[in-house]
Length: 379
Image (cartoon, rainbow, N blue to C red; front, side, top):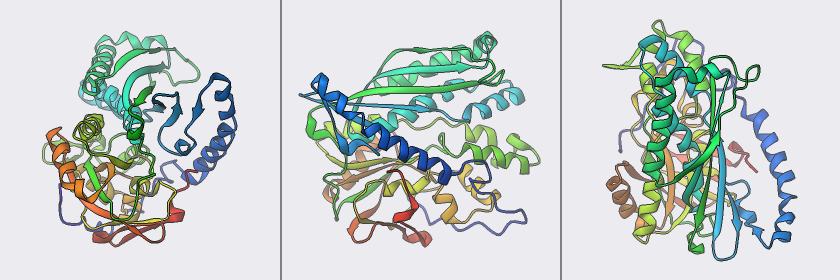
């Protein structure tokens, strides 16, 4: 997984393309998230009337945790985003359906969030909202979605509990589908909970490889198509076209976290590297310095996006996963064994750096990139 630091892209004649120019402005979205969290926190008192309580520290994390006595329950809901639009266009261009992979992407968005708190995923629910009933008339596409959804559930050893398939003409565009998944999991025994209480200087940072862009940054990736003479059929590497590379299914990381627990390795904290890119390493509120001294290999599609969009490393690593889909913070003594266990599950991994005492910041030293405490506002 380790590779020489990715160089900044050569200057492009085109104007650099940022995520904001593609229509995603986190400075507008994040304040709403914070306001919603504060309003939601005020409802936690209702749990007391049922004999339960929330784990307050889970607010602002990737999954919500409920204390039900002998164990914790964790829950999450996530949507796919706009990756299905790429699948639709590639089906039009090539005749091939990519909806089995799209199903995995959708489940991964929920499960990869859920496991950050130390939960074992138990049940997944589906939300498939089409722009009209005719979306389901394409039997091959619909069956690919079903097969891919079941296959992802089998990989993660979760039950598919059910779901909702509304036809929302006038809300969802005709011919399109909006996909989402919710997931419930259990944290048992309770000491498996990983909300960062044990996160401390000296911990190692282990990065798990991504398969490509995953399901974040697609607004930017789709906007970039306007600059490509062959659009989605442009080659990003010999024999690999842009659209196909974008549609590589998101990695499912729960087999790794389950194997770590079975091996007796405690995860002090975890972060799913999705929106906000590597800035997600700053997610925990503690004032700590995260020093990265080795970066993973960058998948060809992400190298291509960075170069064609004219992005420097700060923009690219602050937006995309750049080869690292998930971060594990573990005791230094467990770092190499964590890598070995991940590889045994078919996921490449790298001991990328360490946690240090100091101001809250992320230092990606091979690239000369620094993200300060103000780079991420999720609470």
